Length: 121
Image (cartoon, helix red, strand yellow):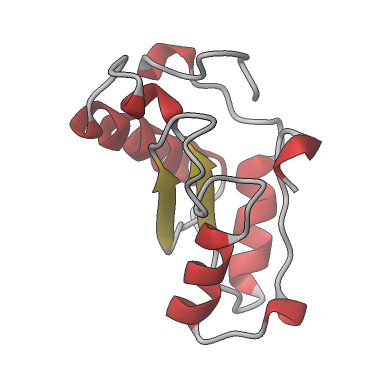
């Protein structure tokens, strides 16, 4: 769930969109890999560390698996740059999506992006 600026900076703030774990589990049962592609400027701003971001991502994984045992995440791509940095990995630029496409060896036309904010697309 989008919590607004500056984003989730404590694990206790994290809330999944209802049904997210079930959706990820269904996709995984169909044999599709799943990646998280996320802007995390809170790291670039010094609000949290890379290690704290890792703890938050671990909680995302746990919450997904709590909802559906098949809801595994294959990879996390996180851009920690601040807005306005010109980083080509920062959504809505395609850098992280292109990385995932290359890493998974799939075609872009065969991929789907789902998010909590349309501005990321």
